[in-house]
Image (cartoon, rainbow, N blue to C red; front, side):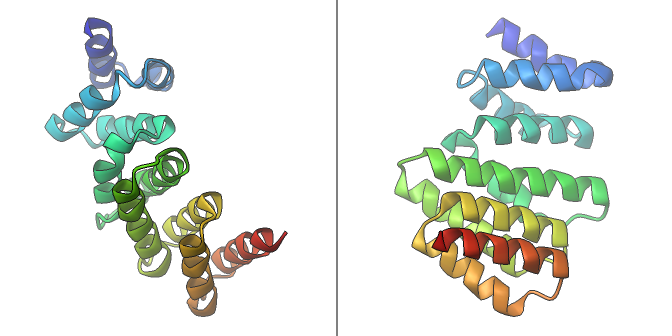
Length: 169
């Protein structure tokens, strides 16, 4: 546990090494999940929070679903924060593909469906489409189908179409 605490502390003090720190935290999972969630909630540094979300998304542990869902649904004012939302959406997709907890899956699906259909952020809609394609359930494809009919961004519409075509193969 001391090793995990030291790694999380390194996110606060050595931004140049954060990529390596995130990799180490991911390798130490699942023991790192709860400490990362706690560190996210106690941190006020958006950069540190972004690295924590990156680690949690790569780990894909169901215990992080609520936090990742909150991040997906957070309105942001700048592009960098938008990237964190996209990473969180991909993390929700990873969680859905690995958990057998129906409550977690339903929560993640609701967040991803919202992310696909509602936000102005085309990148978030794109990330949600990729996650829903990975999940590959009837509900995921229904969300993709709904999106295809309303999507106006060419890039996102193309990605949704790719997901839908892939489901027929």
